[in-house]
Image 1 (cartoon, rainbow, N blue to C red):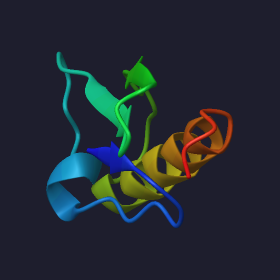
Image 2: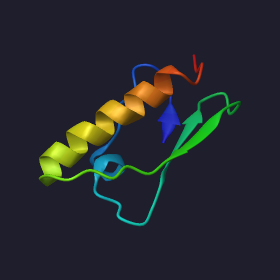
Image 3: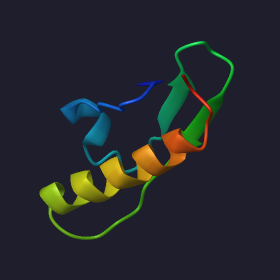
Length: 64
């Protein structure tokens, strides 16, 4: 998924991905982070946790 502010992850980006990572890539292509989120709870709780984590990481990437 492309990281530009504001970060708007899709339902597919937030789904429980068990063995996969989510790639955050700056729109300009100068930074990439790979994120694998482990959390317990319902699908809704997992999506909220993952959204918060992806936003926190995107904020540190310097994407414009």
